[in-house]
Length: 226
Ligand code: PGA
Image (cartoon, rainbow, N blue to C red):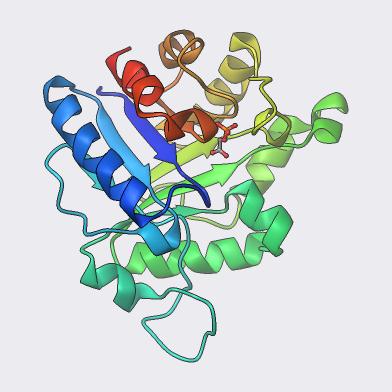
């Protein structure tokens, strides 16, 4: 199975920088058999019309349009031909108060509209130290349809995101094999993935979701080549 290599730009890179990056990356990845996704910042979203890269949305409200000040809705994604979305990222949950219920509503809405859904889960350090992480992960998935055929699960331990401390191969394998007992969806890993550890992580996962290290095109392309 080809690997999923996804870059989450978060709130980085403006429109000009994003479009230069995407054009360059699209020409570089021509020979890769990985599936490459980029999630640009909301205001830098561009039409999903690249040959070798799929553009996804980092966030979207679960409505076609309407009175939702500050939100992007389905109508905006449709116009850009975007049909991939990231849901339940820990930054959305922890900084912007998105509960499991809200994440599940988004999941249902975008499932109804046939989107490819990257659904993020991951334990915090306290849960890991208490050795409750598997139960916690199962609970985070309990409100969504694990049989949805366009689901990709991104396992991203919160303590590994943006910290420079990635989960060990053993920790990733343990969580991944447990998640594989719950669903046939691909399980990708995110949390301090970079050009130095991507190769090892790709041996034990179906792909990677890369934050800060994806902002540098040379580093990100190196990960794709792995
Ligand atoms: P990071 O972020 O690679 O900077 O740790 C990953 C993510 O939040 O998806």
